Length: 266
Image (tube, rainbow, N blue to C red; front, side):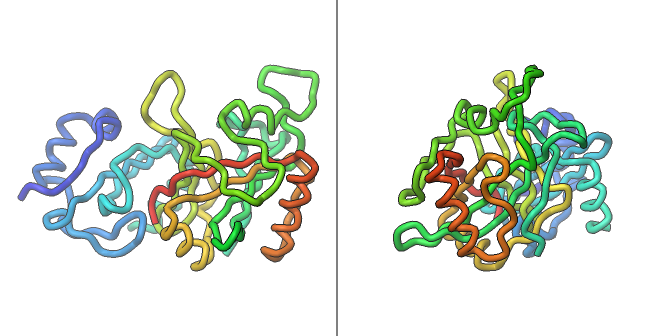
């Protein structure tokens, strides 16, 4: 029986026309499934359903999501993360991923990005936020003179300097925050070379848990505020009020940039 499946051009290019056609005809697609985003049941015979292809270095996993939760897309993920997802198919609020600001993997000895989730009050509204801070200075790719170009690199990508936290930053086009299977997976940036597919700028070594309050706020606004600070500006703060104080101090010292990003998933 035909399915109400959306197979994007990017997914079709990865799996091939023949497999895509079989899916849409119902040959290889399940009737019922657990949405890879919100984890609630779905039925591809009754509900518009997206095909989501998670691709690692050696493994690819085709998953299904409510079309209202995620669009059909290809998501690049770490191989070990994908293997963990494969095993789960048959919190922690802070993690680090080896990535340069342009998304290029770094050597283990180089600075890595730490990401912390928290709720930030701006005006009378509570916003879900992610705070990104490298463990050390990040030099511009291709340079050997050292220095810390982390914030200038992000400003070139469209982040804006944040001197206060009195206003909500502007939406950064082409970027998004990916929640899948109810957990934080990645911050996505536009693909290179004119590719319409997004790539991971930061991705969790293992999917990160976020609090129910954070997820509720994100689902309400469909937007996540992303703050990035110079190394040593924020540190690991055990409470959200202390995190806010550290952000205010970094902003006042000119060591903070910010952007708002659409939420992908729930």
